[in-house]
Length: 242
Image 1 (tube, rainbow, N blue to C red):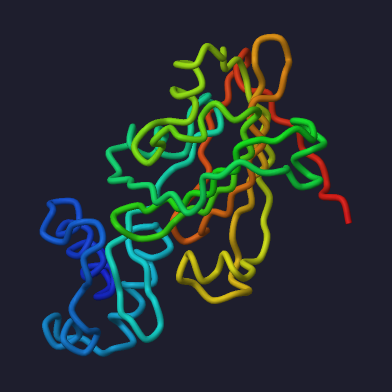
Image 2: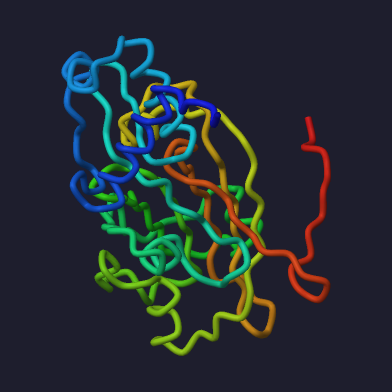
């Protein structure tokens, strides 16, 4: 006699079907937990077990005091030379960009070490996936040629290419960290929450650094994916420095 499927798994499967069928689209709020538990005829504990499973799978985001939301976790690909928005849109995600700052200034020390001390473009952006903040990104772009370019719906890489810069390669480090202010406020999450921190350097064909990036990605919204092959991606493992 086959084993009986646990009630929480039945609920998880049903909720998954509703999300994938579009009954609850990305960003939608689920009914209150008490309403759902009554609907499924289970205790709150059983319902919460199902919700926790879907949250672990990246389909839901539970926010204390606000509710439970459909939030399919976006996959950030390390193997392609694309920007965040390009990677996510290629997966069918709805991505919008808010430009928080686009001004010419003197780069801070971390960027000066890469692009020099000459005036450069500071580009601060907030990426929203399904209408919800997911990534905060600060980029320092060599030169001032893009200071007046509308980058809210245009790839930074595409804009650089349009101005004659050949984007050749990028190096990137992604490490775990803790969310700090003021970025926590921009991402609408509490300070101290675990996040992914990205540092990316983009180079031209001649080795000149074109862009120095720092980004904060919500761990509840993003996951890192990569493909390995004998002749493909090279992965180096190292301990983080103290």
